[in-house]
Amino acid sequence: MILLVAGGFLLSACGAEVEPTITQGSPANTLAPENTSVRGSLSTPESTGVSGPLSTAVSISGDASDETIIIGISLYVLVDEAEPSNQSLSSRRTEDELLEILDGMNDIWRQADIELELRTVATVPVPANVLEGFLAGSLGPFFNGFDRTFNIPGTATINGFYVRSLGRANGVTVPSTRSFFVMDTPSVFDRRVSSHEVGHILGLEHTLSDQGRLLYPGTNGMILTSQEVEIARENASKLTGMGQ
Ligand SMILES: [Zn+2]
Image 1: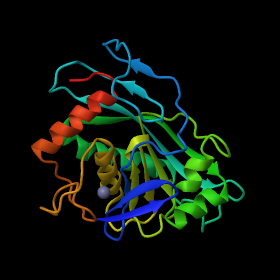
Image 2 (image 1 turned 120 degrees about the vertical axis):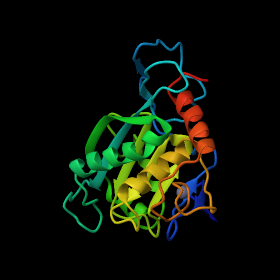
Image 3 (image 1 turned 135 degrees about the vertical axis):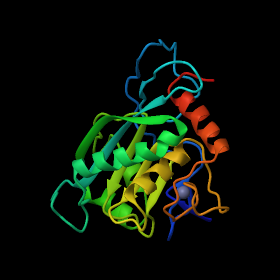
C-alpha cells in the first residue's frame, strides 16, 4: 500500500499499478448534499450514521437482516465541456456501457444480498482542468470544482465517475464522499474495479491473502468472505438509514 497526500486528501493506493483509496475523513471541499428520499415499506425517521457529504437517495426493502439491502447508485461519464469528443480528456465510455457494468456489479454484490439500484446515469461535461487532474492522478480539481465550476445531476448514495485516466490507477475511492472513480481501460474487468471500489465505500479493506477475493488489489477476484459480507451489509444498512 502506498500513501500519497494530494490536495489535502490522504490517499491509500492499491490496484494493479496504483489504485488509491482515500481513507481520511471528509475532504476539505465537500460535495453538495441533496434531499434524502427514502422509499419502500419502512419509513425511516432520519438517516443514521451517514456523515459523508454526497447526497443520499436511498430505497430500502424489508427489515430482516437476511433480506436484500438496496442502495441507490448513480453513474456518470465525465467529458470535456469545451470539446466532449476530445479523446485525450473525455471518457470514451457510453451510458449503455455503464449500465452493463452495473449489471456486472450486481452479479458480484448479490453474494452479499446487496443490490445497487440505478438512480441516474448521465454524461456530464466538466472543465478540462478537472479531467487533466484525473490524468495526473489528482482528485483535487474535481472536488474543488464540484458545485462551483460544474454540477453533477441526480447524485445518489453511491456515485461512480468514469474518466479517461487516473494516472496509474485503475480506480480510486473516496469513502467519505461515497464516490468512486474508474478509468476507461483498467487492467481488470470494469465490473470488478467498480465493485472493488464499492467495497471500500462499504467499509472493506484490502486483503493480500487470496487473489480470488474482491478486495485483493489488482486482480479479477470477486469473492467476499462471510466476514466481509457482514461488514458490508452493516455499513450498507447504515447508508440506507436502517441501522442494525
Ligand atoms: Zn482498493
